[in-house]
Image 1 (cartoon, rainbow, N blue to C red):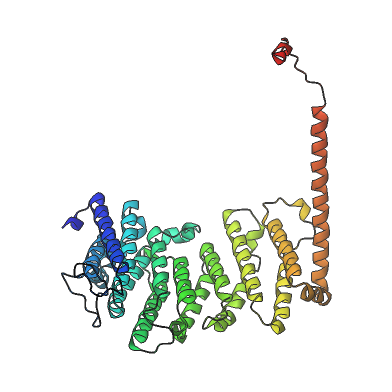
Image 2 (cartoon, one colour):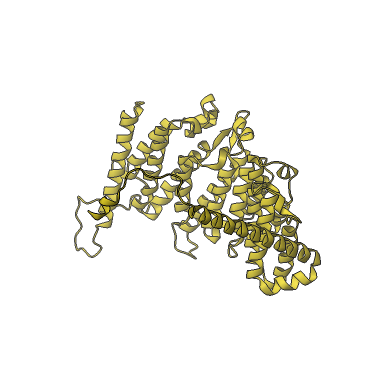
Length: 449
């Protein structure tokens, strides 16, 4: 009855009390003595669900907590109600991102409580509760990641920050994916059921990119982060699925072609983390399918060379992230391919080097690309010294451009140092001149006292 009221204070009190009850239940379970001869009948023992997985209505803390959490979440986000989603009512198409900060706070608190419930269950009970929890987390993630198409196309920086409910949902999903309800290398029923549940959750997240209407669509940068959570955290048996790997590759390819530059930037950051995971199932397929699209990002867009606008800054950030991805890939390649790939990176970076950068402002995109290329080439020469020297002999054009850029950079540095020394000398000379203001009162007597 209390949760039906539209009063933030009342709902906040309810969720805070629920958290206290769950904390007390966890404390009671942790205080159990496994060596005790007799057990207290009054003490809460957890292990809800037992061997059957059935929660006793009226006696189960987990069941009652789920009821409260579901009421809180559907009150703040009616779109997660399965009946509303099935009927495609008008409220279903609204964007949750536009709700108040109070609603976001209640959603975050509810999700935090939700994540603690499996700890009060037996393994069978967890496999009954977890599908409900994962369903709620994925739906909150979906609804909190909707953005209006007007904002998505006109404001490239709109997706820089995740909403708070989306962040909490991702953290909760990561915790669940990393905590399997089975022992490693166990092929029992619990292992199979848990694996299928996580694979279904992964597939549901991948399906987000097909959700859209005339008014809104899902922020693709959120989908990329959610997919990364599964790829980086899920055990190998979950990821040994061709459909999930292929769908993930298609998602990354779509994001690299996305007109929103922030989406491209977050996609490249995610790939940087994924490319170095040599033991991840499907990693080779991922690298083979996405390396060429990443290399394409190092081509200089015409718009980047014309102005110093915010869009040009984002274009420059995309190029920087793409270069980082290629360097990350360089660290995991076997030696026979490393030299060839290093030669590719060197040639791409050499294209950014300018013959005379001194006449450009530091904010000019051409100058920033020049500085980036020179910095990364110097870094690569320090890490892969022998290969770098060998390639400079085989790539005379790269060698000439690099030597010229280093000479110009040294000349600019010398000019700046000379100007700095001259300014100091001028300041010292100015300080030696007698002061033009003379005091009319003698203060020497104050020094004697």
